Image (cartoon, rainbow, N blue to C red):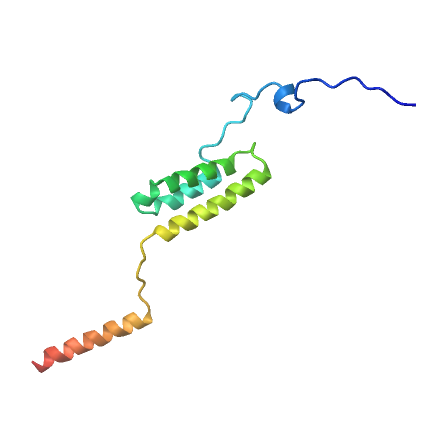
Length: 123
């Protein structure tokens, strides 16, 4: 015994074809100042102005807002988190190198002070 089924419809049976289209009202509002976005803004406050206002910085903020958006899936958030980490690493690499004094620098400074003091006392 064979069962005959009705022919399928000509239209696509995807959500976009069968459901009401998503409007801006149906999507929850993205939090402009979520926890991740606030943290990125705090980080950017410590950067020089040229980096803090760059396209990289704006991209980092956009990624942070996507992480804060509760309607995004865990998969999307994981990809945004990875991109945000890459972005912040890239911005850190653009920071100018800072010279940090260490014990050897302190020793050299004291030696130079002794030498200039000895030279001044001999004259």
